[in-house]
Length: 443
Image 1 (tube, helix red, strand yellow):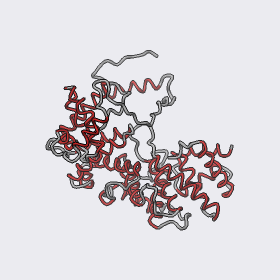
Image 2: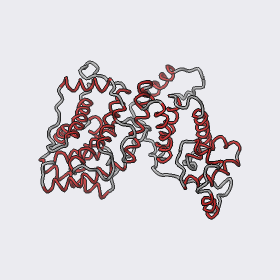
Image 3: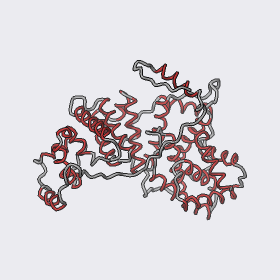
Image 4: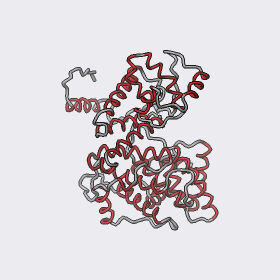
């Protein structure tokens, strides 16, 4: 097949679609795309030493002590307060002392003094200089927009939200929280999240999704109350669909707390709905959900779960409720739309779920009666947040799965998947990974 170079700037989407379809009829037809290089989860610290040397620690300490109580007249203080972070800490002062004179040395960098003063040293040293220039220009335009009369407009909220998402993708969590704090103040100026979602559902949904993301990472309640978010037409229509088709509400977990029982029933109904999506367009019993409605449904259910019990080590619920709640949260995280091509990591949720499985395993070993729930928790965990287990943890999980299989007298994977669907299992997403784990356990 000949190689063609597209140089005509007037080529439209239709022509590009034809080119792509032509390529897919070549030798690559039917072949999956090659795997991308995994993103390394690490934080870079790159000191600026190529322009001017940093002051000595003794000078910084002396300067910090002299200005500890007299902060109202410092020139850089006005600049810092004008930016997102309102909190003035010793680390913030020390950073500005180090890098403010460096930015002044380059006239072209002076317009980006505010963003760099609030976003720490350059976090991505491997990126080319052109990328840093684009990021600096984005910060400069953002500051200009936030200084004008449209500081709380949909455009301004969307821009700052995307800056927070950018930092979240690159695992700069602290900097992302700084941007998200600015988004919260902008949302408050618009009458709260419910007011923004009534006026612009797309912008409000992005902020809502980001609030849930930070709640999963920090182990705190979402910054917005669940009452602030109105029920969309999709949630009402889907709830009516559940009632009309009489999905079986799971009653195989005795002793579950009443509120958590309803959360489990909602997630179970959602998984049943996803499992019953027709493979052909002729089957029209299941209502269609648009991408925006789907995002609202997932966010609403996850918001209710995180408001019920935040992901912190001191969770005031018993072993059974703790395990079921963590498994439901793990299921909902896999349904959330991803920011990038790599699945997000939820280390806090993974650690809590691992500890809860071990605790419930000891309870089941002594008393019995919850083997099915524990098997459901292990398999859901392995196909979601526990997929990156260490060797010693994986051996323990395999041994636990073997014991549960013998107690439940399960012989095939089909029998296992039938049990899992009774608690909440998305076949189209979990079948392949779950079958792989089952084969490893049986080998």
